[in-house]
Image (cartoon, rainbow, N blue to C red):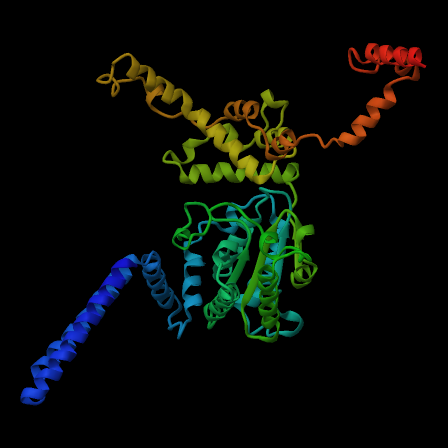
Length: 475
């Protein structure tokens, strides 16, 4: 900022001096064309220099360049120009994920077939064939709420549905819309809805998602906008309105719901708002009314857990360099084993993981996969410690090659892994009312204990007795 001020002062001095010189020259020999040209060149150069330094000092300049580049990529993907987008629409472009870049599809989700079938029926048809579902009672739901315990796959469902419907995925986070400047929050929300309508033109559709977060493998970056990578839910943005709540927060929720209602009047709009939360009771009643479809995503039952485990095993084989050899044949075929009480391996694991969520089962499978390479890494570490680096290439095959994932690895993982729900319960401190505890303590003291002074602290009974005797003696 100081550099800019100095440059402005320098430019002003130059202008004053040249104007004075021009006045003197005009008085002597008429109109000084060369002096006027020199003055114009100096002024233009000063302005360009100031803009250059202003861009260097601007902390959002790099972010704006990335957003502009992404806007051009979106235009290529859509096949038409976005038009005259506002600044807030342009900043929302960085929150958009192309369906081709989403790394999750319906085949990656196990144990939720009924929920997926219902959602695909109500979303894919109206969004991909609007000429058939042309409004009225056949219109697609404007709002879908997924609620349930943490780790049950709510965010994965939203991502997979957007990919299935070939819809752009627009992630809304509180930190992306909230601003310290008055009125900017409402403008940011308006920009998000306007951009979603632009993206849903033609054959495209758009899903506005509130809740959850993408992993590092997702092909978009929220860091340039200062968006947090921590998880969040829809109640963080659209929670209950309270009397003591700040007017900016209330105005944000009102603006969001007003624009949401505007989608109902636009029968050609192919925009769906999806939310995910594990605390639906914290949502505002007006927001719940606008979520026309609410689906509970509960913890998986035994059959669903077995399906999830087999899904993780199939994905492990597809993504591992060993291919089908990455998982033991008996475990992958999932046939009854005598060592497991004549049960199928996945069935036995499902029975041992009661109360596990989908995310817990993924972490359990990850822990088991680490156990499968533990013997290899331990053997290589032993070779290094013995100084036999030259003999590493000639090490035994069992020490250099990874063995397949087996049921024994899962059994070892079960002994060390703690599911999320159990960890949450262990971290909770008992809610004890101090007044109730004190009342219970005094109630347990008998009248004889009080009379003998046994319920009082040490020394209190003797002091009181001596004081009483002294008082009686004085009387």
